[in-house]
Length: 405
Image (cartoon, rainbow, N blue to C red; front, side):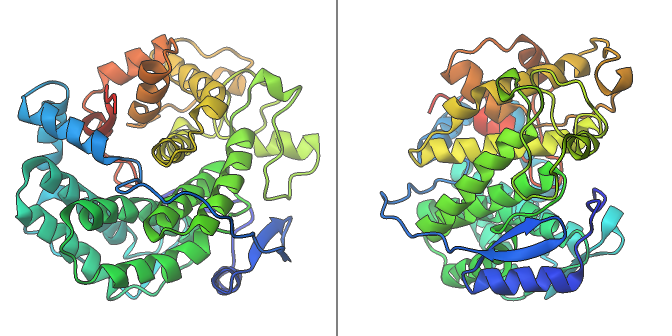
């Protein structure tokens, strides 16, 4: 698991954030302080579309049809998923009341179990939708019920990120089961878990490396959709837009990237330090590029996931984000594909490992919007089927490759 931020959260501070957020107080972090901000106004809006977290019913129907026809790459991707440990019908959930996650997974008390049970629930929900085998729906429900009956909190330095990763995946499974399968007696208890255990932690955002807050906003957006919570959705989208704009640089930003919304970065010198010492900025460079591509991939994936959900919900953010996403994917996949890194970027040396994170954005930008993305296309096609990163990304060749819906 990634290391804790440069300014680690104290357990007491995490509890305070959760308590205040539960009470409806919006928190804005600046430097090392936490101060209350004005409550977000509740606005009237159209009802949410369900299923509607990362996948719509039309997208699910497309995948089901392609697998039934034995078409590629969906059939290979389905076989990859159904043969994985996440699809096992003998899986036993391992819930805990307190999930404790420290830096570098030390300690790891329930962290891997929670993330992987969430991915398994989503996997089973997809397997049920594609095959119609109710044993998979029952297993997804069993996993979600076990955790909703048990978990109460996340603790230690990586608690916000752990909450975000698991909180991003649970709603994907819940949306399919509640709105497509239907027979789920304990779904209200699961919704209460999302509202009380996850949402108060992720919704306020955080001062940290950008992939943390982007994943937190992904979780907040997905949870808000599942809960039909328009106020939380609007608040999370507003924060997400600020963080996405500050995570990926484009020349339209000016001489330097935008400052992150959480505060604590107030000067150019601090900004350069925050960008891992990078002082020359080019289209598509990300705040964590010079850290490593793995964490950068987390951030870019979360951006794409949120954008995909907004498209389903009728407030498509892809047009606003397309330049940042296409340049970021193009830059990083170019180096993943073997192009030499110039000295002006990270001193000429990067740590690769972007991961299985390109399908959602590639489909949206290249296939739907018609944007040429040669580097991203080469990377994506060479790595199909893209599986899971065992954190919060799973089966996106199956769900989003060439999906026109």
